[in-house]
Length: 365
Image 1 (cartoon, one colour):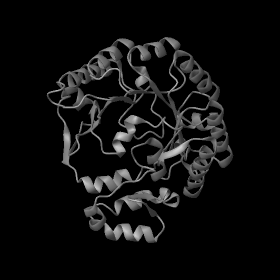
Image 2 (cartoon, helix red, strand yellow):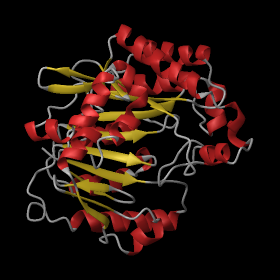
Image 3 (spheres, rainbow, N blue to C red):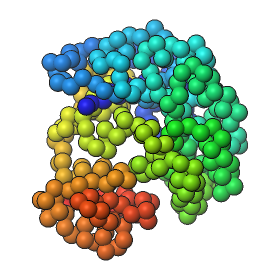
Image 4 (cartoon, rainbow, N blue to C red):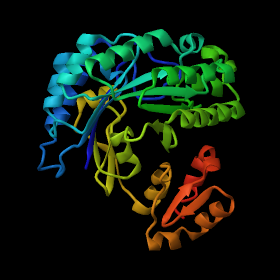
C-alpha cells in the first residue's frame, strides 16, 4: 500500500547542521507556499491519476508542527484514506501545547517525530536549538496524556563538542523517556548545511573545529546500537531502532520500494517504475506547483540492492540478480560485509558504517 509525504519547509530558525530545503520565511512566502501546496494536492485527482489509496501519511520539513490548525485541516481533507494506518508529524521541541496535540489527533495524526538531536544543552545551543532535556521530557508526557503515544526521537552523532560521555547522557535520557522509536543519524559533512560548509572551508564558526573525529563518531554510533539493543530497541534499518511492532510503516515503504507520492518543495515520488521530484526552489514551486522535474526510469534490481540492503532483514534477490551481481556479492561475502541467511542477503553488523561503499558497488554492475 502507498504512502503520501507532505513537505512543509518552514522553521523558526535554521539549524546549523541542516542540509534540507528548508528555512525561515516571511508571512507572504508562507501564504504563497500554502496556496501552491493545496493546488498540487487537489490536482492529484484520486483515484484517476493514482490507483492506490494512501495507507500512511508523513508531514516532514522544516517544522510541520508550525502548520496552523485551519491549514492542517485543509491538507488532511485533501488526502484520501483516512483514518490512515500511520500519520506522522515532525515536531521541533520547545513549543508543543496540549491544544495543538488535540488538533493533530482530530486531523488523523497518530505518530509524532521529535527532532531532539541531543539532550545536552551545550551541544543544542551550538546548533541553534533552544530546547532542553527537561522540556523534551515534559512535552512527551503531555503528548502521551493527549493520546499521542507513538513517538520517535531523533539523535545526531557528530555534533560539535560531542563526547563519549555526553553521548552516554543522551542515551540515558532515551532510556528514561522510553519512546517506542529512536532514529540515530550520523552528521553529514557537505556544503548544503552551514556547519558542513564551514568544516569544508576549514573555518571556525558553528563549532566546526569541535566536531568529533570520524573514529569517535563511529564509536558513538556503535555505542548507540549496543545500548539500544540492551534496552529493547532493535535496529531494523541502519539509522532506525524500534520496539517490536513500532517500526515506521511509512519509512519502510522507501526501503522496500513501495509506491509513494510527495507534495511540496523538494518532495519526491515513486510509482514502482519511475521517480519524479519537485523543485527545491521555493520561488519556482510557488509559481508552478504542478511542474515536476527530474523524472527518471528506475532499475529495480539496482535499487533493491542500493536501498533494500539498508534494512536489517536484507533482501531476497531473484535468481537472475544472484547471477548479475555475482561479482560484488562474492567480493563482499568474502570480506565479511555481506552474509547469506537462507534466500536472503544482508549486511553484517561490521558492514553498516561502510554501507555506502558497498551499495555503490551494485550500481551499474
